[in-house]
Image: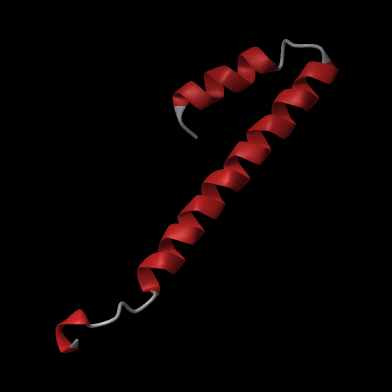
Amino acid sequence: MASLLEKAFRKASELPSDLQDQLAEELLDEIDWEFQGDKSLADFQSVPTRNTTNW
């Protein structure tokens, strides 16, 4: 784990539980969004393109 992320988790552990939960939900949502973006890009790049030189 990156040291900056470790620092963020240490600081977050000092927050009240309800705020920790809220932060965790937001982080998980962001991570899911990032993975979806990566998957979408990979899917897009694997789609064959039409050869337009035969038109």
